[in-house]
Image (spheres, rainbow, N blue to C red):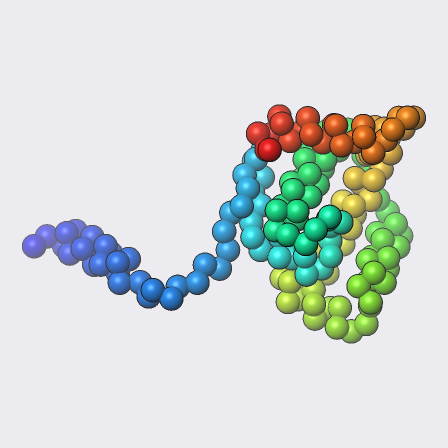
Length: 161
């Protein structure tokens, strides 16, 4: 029997003999505009309360995370400047206070699989999003509705429901 056939047979058998109790560690829940959202992204957002969602469901977190990524893509084209370190530090203190602060917070961050630097980057993006929306919708008579309509259009262009 040629060596290639033996190797292919072993590979095929090893896949068939995988334990029935295998656990899926992560999965992709959404792909759009070159972005990927995974189940671990949703868990991290939930654990660290990184998004404001109505309802504590995976679908609510997925939608808000998709919206965030769409807005950040738009903001990157809109010339929003990077926030300064002081603004990020202030935003971080607000986030910490919302979660109760204390030493357990860093443990929670590690458990969620997020570094302090990644958190600061997330919080800096929060500031960018707010600055972009303030600039884009300045003077809008019904800002919440205007933002919702705009996000709906972004979702439609990205092929999201």
